[in-house]
Image (cartoon, rainbow over all chains, first blue to last red; front, side, top):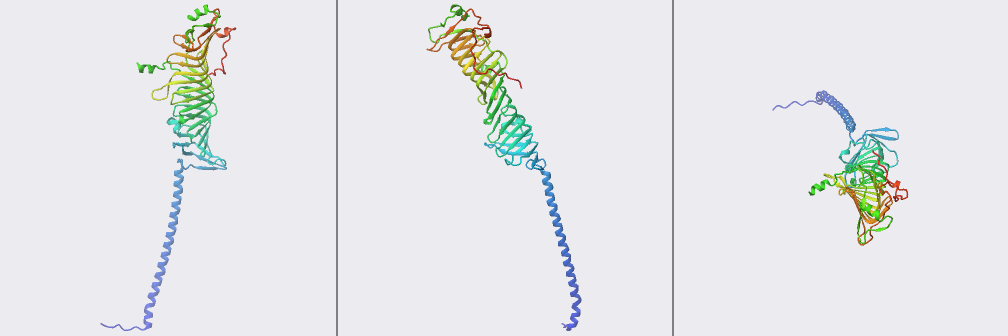
Length: 234
Length: 197
């Protein structure tokens, strides 16, 4: 094996110098490329984040329309107007009820949550399936979520599941204990006839109805009363 | 008619129809209720859906045609409808100052039952039957609304039937025409007419 001849220091320096400068330049260029890449990534991340936030906001707005649990609120100065409001709850027996309306205005101050309703409706067992959610109970109403009462005013029309119909100018549904009271003159129709009275109350889930303050009724007398019983015994 | 015979024979005399307790006497032909709907007015009304029963209280007046039933309290019973709910009226039970008023008679009692199925009205407890100037008292009056025959009975082991007749009076004339025999005063404000919805 041949030995390489030894280089002098000067010869060595001359040989290494250009190579080292070239490597430094390459390193610097690579570092700059990485910085530009990271900055680009940062921008892309921020843009993606902004898009996600924007998308979420748009989704909330789109889903909020027509959904009862997220009514669209339109600030109108002192009061808050709600479109298609929906209030849910349960009575003392655990029977669910749903109060809806065309629109609502929250009453500022006073009772928290007190809401004035336009064309209130009620989905509740006491009113029966015939009434349902689609039946407008009155022109206006006031829902009190604290007391769980729905006060109806102007053109009140109620039907119970025991086939009673009431027309009056005002009435209150006590949703907590499944009662209806009215202290204004009422005209009613029942399975046994028709009634006019100064006031009324529906108790015991509709099984006990009381008319007060001067009652006038018309009973339709079926002359065949008892015929069925007689036929059954023959 | 037995009452007419008695009237001719015992005019102006307070009559004890029989010495036997619980004796009965024909009280003449009672005017049956008219046709059509039954209008009832009262202070208050309670409806008991499950029992097919409604209860009027406070100056109750039930009017049908020319007849009127007045009481402090009236319960109306209905037969059950097919399936559930109210069917036809079967019976009315009245209590407290009960009056059955027709154009020609006024009958007072403590209690009254109007049975629509049997076609019968029964008044009991201190019954006073007034027909124009003629007055009869007893403890129980049963009026068959189909035959028109009514019977007044005394109490079991108690008060007997008593009658005062005035044969020269027209007992069938409307009370308003019997000037010197005014009708008994009916308590309360009187019936309230039903106005259609």
